[in-house]
Length: 371
Image (cartoon, rainbow, N blue to C red):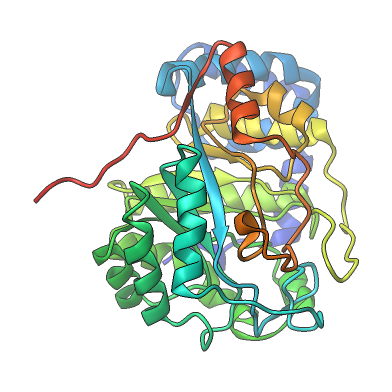
């Protein structure tokens, strides 16, 4: 389990290590890339370091070359579907937090079917379902029935819900779920404790080992990430790299995806503790692509239209579009959204731009084998 490895490292020390990297370290690591040598973790740390900001153009070129070599000129499209905004956890940065006195809603099975019909009619065949952390409102039985409906419309169903035990994950896989997204939010123990006040999510260790349980259960793909803006991003990227290495080594039959969501405005008026500007964000994306050549990198509608446009071909492999972050959002339920999206374009508009850039937006790239 990653927790054992995680406890061998200190967050503040990790930040200092990354900050200590020099321009010479970055040049050495980039030269190793050009020479086709196997990179070490210290190379990854050089590439995420502030010193690498002087080499952003070189990193962008390498990122583009690696992406096209490993993934071709394709971008997989998906949409999120929120099943519920009911939550018993208190996370100060989240619009769904228990502390926020907002109207709560959990979709009925008929409402789930209606949302599925609307989304599938747009051509989307990859769906990501999300919930809050209220087990009583969205228990395993509810999720199983929801997935059974969604599998009538979508070839790939992924979950971004509360962490579960291995046996529960296995039951969801049995009814057709093939992907798990479980973001740690922050790898900083002190920050995690400060912003998670109650509920199951308060248990950092259980969440930290969630991707391991998903790997043991046998998900086809697992997504991890850190919510940039809660703590020092250099420390977050350090531990995200460690976590990725651990999962790739231990669950090599499972494909890994990485996402770097940045804080967005939400109910509760929480503001980022540390702003992560676009140059830093780009450096992190390029470093991930250069070091983890075969992982998927996901870019959501949290980011601006301009930034998303510019990142096409530079490392990103998967993008959402026309996203609604509230339960029943595609049917116009009027429920409270989890956070504000930035890129408001329709799926058609996003796909049109991807094609104009010379890339191919893919609506379906997976189907379950017939047995």
